[in-house]
Length: 425
Ligand code: KET
Image (cartoon, rainbow, N blue to C red; front, top):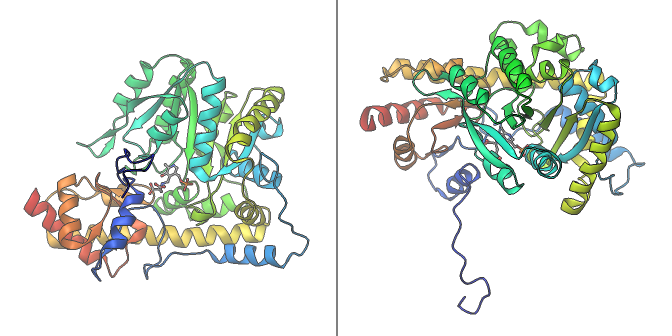
């Protein structure tokens, strides 16, 4: 009896394309079901992982009787903000030294993107934002609801399963001058395809020449870098990073800061510290002068205060505890390396399993792509088939979360892909 309800005319909304995969998975009674939808790390036993260093930081926080539950300032925990800016821009970043970075603690990556977008919609002269095609499914919604107008630039070429660099340059070259451009800082989601450093440099030059404003989404920082270093056999670099000696220019975000220009960056600690549900993130806006940065921060407070007043304290305290203690920081990178190693091993095992089955097609992209996901190239029909017949859950664009796989489940997935390709090809 809903006819009397003032909401009776509502239609049932569809589930979210990514988070809805988990909803469907949870409803499936099959003992063989496998969730490769959401990008969340799982252990070899298929269990969620809380990092040891996070447990230790939490213990320290609980034992510290001087800690209270007062409201944080609107911009969040000061230590956390400073450490987050250092993590993304580098400890010796000239922009940080010159106090021209405004950093505010936000609700994980999504909240940071939303606060940044609301700020731009109010204060930036161009309301158009270009996002890559394809991109994380939530991007267009976050930006549209904040009041920006979303356009796309070419990014991925399904034929080569690589970057459509020519298309990207053409589209950004034709973009309205001054427009905002969303860039994935590393480990592009869903494709796992990143520009090379040389290509980044060309993108930077083009964007700066047209006055396009970079907005970096950094949801996979460090995880992706660790994977990259390991695959390049340069593990020393990772340890160098822990001690702060990694070449600062080796990261796209830092290239854009080094040229003295302005940019925005949304950071998430969901994946790289496994703090998904704690909702810890930061938005940084790099400005030309300290004076502008101070005004920007004051305006960010006006965006945040009526939205959620101020951010939660627990997750940011965990992050600050780890980042400011060099021993805990090192432990964190070692645990990250273990996660990255497991993801890379899953890539190799899946590739080998498909080769062993003689599955038609070239599957080398499984080992070439970067980060948590493999963009398989499977189409919506093949994905639906795998879900129905094999109880394997993934997003309909054919993306699989490699972190959700284990040595035990690889054969089941390989069987499913083989059947999908040979029967639904
Ligand atoms: N940016 C990108 C590119 C991204 O993949 C995610 C999450 C986020 C931002 C936001 O993460 P947050 O938890 O707000 O810090 N992606 C995974 C989870 C999700 O869709 O919410 C995913 O793609 O599976």
